[in-house]
Amino acid sequence: MGNLRVGVVEDQPLYRDMIVALLTAQPGVAVAMTAGGAAEARAAFEPGALDVAVLDVHLADGNGLALGVSLRRRDPDLGILLLSSHDVMELLLDLPADVRDGWSYLSKNSTTSAEVLMRALESTAAGRTVVDPALAAGAYRREGSSLAQLSDRQYEVLQLVASGLSNAGIARELGLSERSVENHINAVYAALDLPRDRNQRVSAVLRFIEETARLDG
Amino acid sequence: MADSPRPKPGPAPRAPRRDAVFVLVAGVLSGCFALSIATQTATLQAMYGTGSWPDFLMRLGVNLLAGGVSIVLAVLVRVTRLTWERLAAAIVGIAIVSSAIRVGLQWLVDIEIENSLLDAGIEWAGAGVLLAVTLFAGWIFADVVARLEGEAQRSAQQAERAAGALDALQAEELRVRREVADGLHGSVQQALVLLGARLQSLEQQLASDVPGKAVIPQIGEVRAELDQLREVGVRELSRMLRPEGLDLGLVHATRIMMRRVPATIAVELSIAPELAEIADAVEPDTGKRLIVMRFIEEALSNALRHGHASRLALTMSLVRGTVVRVEFEDDGRGIPEGAELRGLARLRSRFEAMGGSLEVGRSRRLGGTRLLAEMPGEPAWSPAD
Image (cartoon, rainbow over all chains, first blue to last red):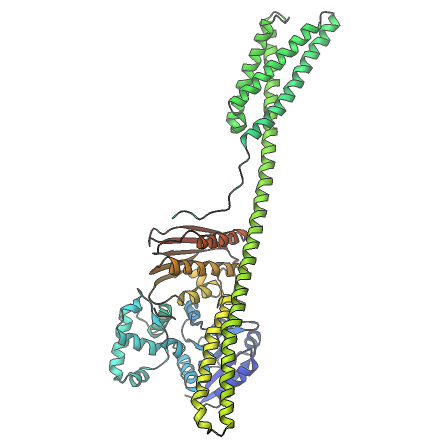
C-alpha cells in the first residue's frame, strides 16, 4: 500500500498547521489537500485524490458533518474523520444509510497524540468506524440496554473495537490469543443481534455509541 | 397528576350583556314601528274625520304591548343563545303569537277594524312580519356586539401571553447570566488564582537552583488542573449559555444531552428517521430549538432530581408535516407543586408564543410523568449547509 493520502479541513490556522505538521512527520502519510472552510474544501476536492478527509465539525462557513456527507457522495471510497473540541461522537448515529461506513470521531485533545491519530486514520481508510479512545474508555453501559447484557470481558473487547484496534491489537492489549478475541467479537455480534453483513463491526461501534453514557452512577 | 396551571382564560362574552343589547335594539325598533303604525292609522282616520286622541293612544298602547310581549317571549326562550335554524323557528313562532295577541287586544278594547276575517288576517300577518323583523334585527345586533367583544378579549389575552413569554425569556436570560457570572467569579477565577500561585512557586524553585527534573511532576499537576478547568469550568459554563450541538440540529443536541444521563438510568431514545437523517431533516430555527432543549433539560431535571425516576423514554417524531413532537415519559413520582410546575408553565407560554404547545400529564406506560411538547419546524433544512 502506498502513502495514506489525507485532506485536512480546519478553520483555525494554528490548529490546521499543527495537524498538517504532525501528519507530514509520519512515514507513509501525505497531506494531499488542505482547506480553511467548507466551501473551499468543496471546490478543492477531487474524487479519488484522498483516502481520508479530516474535517472539523464546526467550520466557520458550515459544518463538517454536512461537508463529509457531500464529499462521500462524490467519492464512495473516502473515509471521513471528524474532529471536534466538544464531545459529539453521537453525530455518527444519524448519518444517512448510504454513507454510514468509515466515519470516525476524535476529540481535538486526542489528536495531539500521533499514535491515536494514525490509528484512527488507518482504520477509517479501511472503512471502519472508530471513536475517540479516551471517550470510548470513559463510556458506561446504559442500564436496560442490549450492551448491559454483555459480560465484562465482552464489553471490554467492544470498547477496544470502538477505539479502532484490530483483532491483533486487541489480543495484544488484553493478553489474549487472536482466536479468542475473534470468539468474543462474534459473541458480541450475536448478543447485540446485529444484522449479519460485512458492516457488523461498524454496526457494533454505532450500537456502542448509542447505548453508552458519559457518566456512571 | 393534575394538569399544571394555565393562564386563566378571560370570562366568556357574558350572556346577560347579549340579552341587554337584544332588548334595547328590539325595544327601540318595535317602539318605532308601534308609533309609526298608530300614526299612519290616525292620519288616515283624520282624513275621514273619524280619528280621536283616545283612539290613537289606545292603538299605540296595544302595539307597544304586542312588541313588549314578543320581546319578553324572546328573552324567555333565550333567542340570543339559539342556533340559526332554531332561531328562525322561535322568531316566527313568537311573531305569530304576539301578532295574534295584538289582534285579540284590538278586538277586546273595541278598536275599530274592518269587520271581516280577511282584514283581521291581513292585520295579523303584517304586524307578524314587522315583529319578526324587529326580533331578528335585535338578534343580529346582539350577535355582532358579542363577536366584537370576544375578539377584543382574545387579542387582549394574546397580548398578555406574549408579554408573559417575553418576561419569562428575560427572566431565563437573567438567571443564566447570573449563573455564568457566578461560575466565572467563583470556580474559574479561583482555579486561575491557584494555578498562578503554583506557577509562581515553580518559578521560585527553579530560580533557587532546584534541578529542572525535580519540578516535572509539579508541571504535570498544573497541566492536569488546566484540563480540569477547561472541562469543568469553561465547558460547563459554555454549555449553560448554549446547549452543545445546537447548531448541528435538534436531534444531535438531544442525543448529546441524553448521553449525559447517568448510565444507571434506563433510557429509551427513539427518533423518527425523517427527523434524524442529516441531509433533509425538518428543523425548527435556532430560537425554537433552544426552547425545545430547555424543555428536555427541564424534563430531565424534574425526572431525576424530584421524581427519582429510574427509567426514561424520549420519543421525537414529526407530525402534521413539519411539527416536531417531543414526548418525554418517566417512571418517577411526578412533578411536585411549586417551582417546578411554575417552570413548566413558563416554558409552556414560550412554546405557545412560538406557535407550539406543551402538555403535562401522567404516563400510562411508565407510571410517572408524561410531558408532550410540539414545536413547528421548517421543512428542507440542512444544518448550516
